[in-house]
Image (cartoon, rainbow, N blue to C red; front, side, top):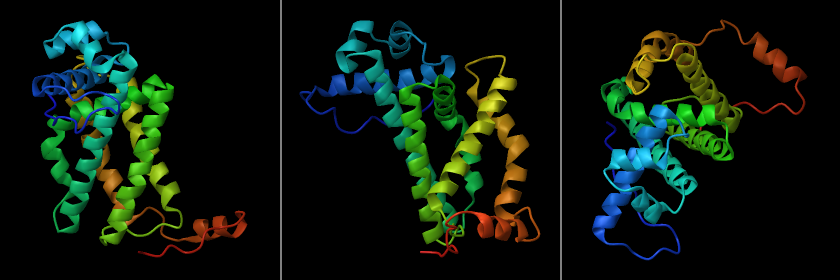
Length: 233
């Protein structure tokens, strides 16, 4: 199972709750993340409560509604992904390897499953969630550029959006066309994707694909209001 830390703080307007209740709230949220990742957002509050070892009434006590529980899960998953990405960038900038993520793939499989289910869901919450991921990706790439790990882009926001959507789209297609026999085996999806995609992906990001910049120059010549040359910093 995913090993995650408790959420920080409490929703605005709520009274401070005892430590035991805060622990129960975190346990419910973590159970909901894994249940949503495995079965989608149609999973019932009753099933989540059973996973967390609490009553459905306690779930409602802490979150008020299933939508509010979903929002708490969204915020928690985004925070976990943000932390992992920045740690990987720092590690790589110091001479380490992005491939350290392979070692923690099992722990992070539920995060992946949650993101993919959000894309499949297509609700307003899902759209907001993906928009947050794109915004965070722009921060990661700026961090990578500032650390000397990545080259600058003429349009950092557009590049971050493309990289995020293309990576998530590839994962979603993988899970849709060839789902694991066991829906709870999120690690199987992640491992298969890494085995099939990481070499070509890293080649493209590291060595490039085109041997000439002619196509880029043609595009910049004819596009309206072309961006200027990318500069680091």
